[in-house]
Length: 189
Image (tube, rainbow, N blue to C red; front, top):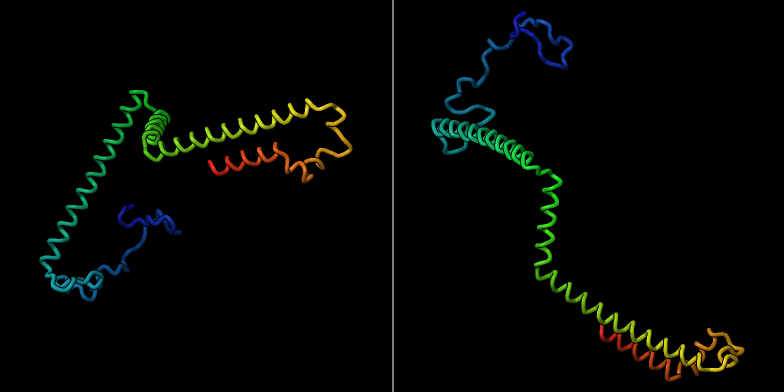
């Protein structure tokens, strides 16, 4: 079997079989074939460009494309070589990822935005801590005041919920002091 006359189209029902090309259109002249000096119908010459200039540009394009392919091959070889060197050094992709993350975290920590955020959060934490300490002190004092009262006075006929909602409780010095400290906390933040 002559390979030139073999059908190699993988989708063809005749693949691998010898095909008769006697009806081939290769001997039929194509219209505009003589127009090669002026350009072809698929790629007409741009205005102001001669056939010689177009040919020079095509030649240069071919050379540039060959250089690009050569550079791709060189780059691919260099990448394989770098991968091999990393493997010999025991550097795995996971190790590289860890190193990149560590460096990125260090970069973040040295950035001004991170420092300002850290300072702001630190100040907010200090103010919150002070406020909670104040609230805890007020509650402890109030509980101490309640312990000092006789047992019968601590639990009268009114429920605790009722006593908190009573206007007399709202007007007490302890409640007002608590309100002032919470208000100061809001203003301070």
